[in-house]
Image (tube, rainbow, N blue to C red; front, side, top):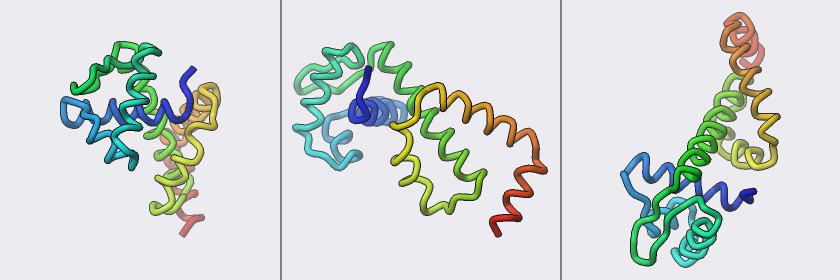
Length: 135
């Protein structure tokens, strides 16, 4: 089972690969505001756990397991952002709120939030009423 810290690294590696075609230790370090040595240590751990391929002085790449999990982590993050927007959370608070809650929800809770967001998106009257209430 991945820890919240492992999840952050996997998510960031996934995002780097999606955006740039590669995940360099220095880029991951910069995006997470950590030292490159911290990225190296975590990459070694994630390599042992089967999430990434890591070789010293080379880019970090994701295994199939890592890629699938990274995609799921990004989807979780995006879903929580969408949910918070729908319920009227101020834009400037959304990123911090998502970062604060995303690792503390079970995947079962995420599935229920997914169902709720889909239902809310299908009921535009509900979304409109929420927006009017929050104005």
